[in-house]
Length: 376
Image 1 (cartoon, rainbow, N blue to C red):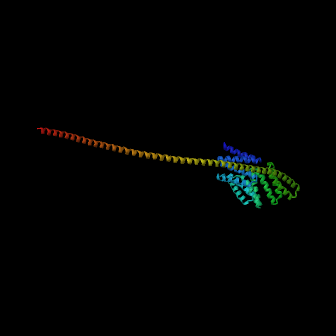
Image 2: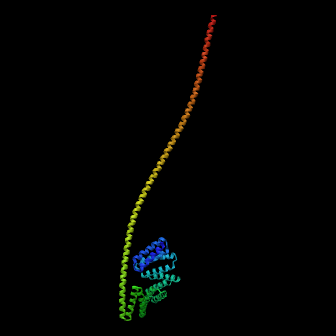
Image 3: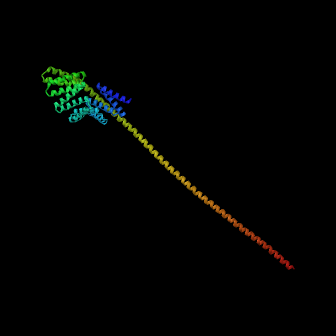
């Protein structure tokens, strides 16, 4: 079952991604993408593309992440996958926010929020409110930022989504500090840190510790401020190690990509050589076949011409033979006529001779009779 295998690849990618094994996550997501494309399963293709975007987003490769997110969004618009559209729009908004293109980021997040509200997807709504809060904060609209963060925290708590809740509480603490509400800021920072410790999220712990440290300094509580500073440094080192690992993975991926691209280039060049050789051989074969066809045609024409000539000569010979036979008949007939004439002539001669002979006999008889008469 190839559909099941594609889903399995996607799930394995997600498992490795959650474990921080980015290289294997990318490998399985790419496998899932290839299989889903082969199966022409657009929903699966969109899911794999979004997952690849998440990995590159985590590697801070914004352009690559944006590329995959937008491809996923295009397919989800095509198949009218509203929850998927909301997720992609949220992710795209985050990238533009990181790129400090705040107005563009706000356009995408408002669309994402509108869709998630229409389909009653409170989990995505919580993400949207957090993202809108961050955009407002960067625009200097602190009150609007806090209002959106609190909406997110309320939805996360309602749906027991402690991951989103940890981030929301940290964002509220940071915004309150900017407003000068230091004690209230520390309350939210501590709540966020408690959840982040359970989840093992060093980035959230570091951010909350940083906010609390600053608030303690403002309240002239150096001991607590120092504790928060030490915790912040500890989490920072942990994050640096993770970032170093990510950077190494990114370089490895780049190396693998370049190596594959080079290999593909060589393979393509070799394939082109083979293709050119095949084309040359094919052209030579076609040329030879053309010559053979021309030779055959010429030979056939010569043969037809030869037959025509022989037939013509045969007809001429037959005509001549017929004429000769006619002439022979005429000659024979003339000869017969001549023979008949000769016979007539000879008969006439013989008849004349007989007449003459007869006459001569009579003359002799007369002469004899005359002499007898003279004796008397």
